[in-house]
Length: 110
Image (cartoon, rainbow, N blue to C red; front, side):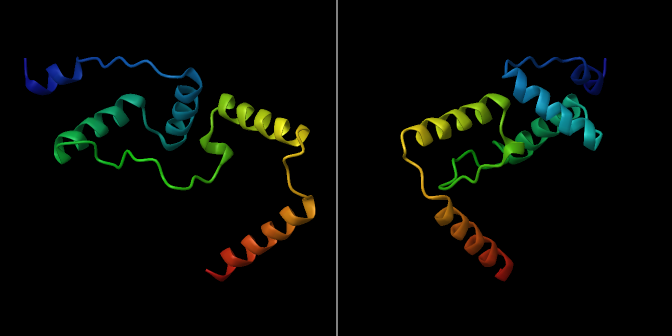
């Protein structure tokens, strides 16, 4: 048996959040890739780089983007916001609107 044949018959099993798997596979389907192809590419890069081929750090500031959140994460964020609103921990809508306009102007200037 050749090395290539042996490699293609090896299985990788991983446990993960079902929502994460569903969202990732939906994206992979749109770009025409299978999970196996992506896992194989990742493993090849690990071997090539002799380590994880990307940074595994948490960024200092994280911008929330719904497309990057699971349904559970999104629901938790909404619940937290609702709790803050009930506790009157929010800001006046006018101030938020002004901040949004300023942010849009800054982004347009870049």
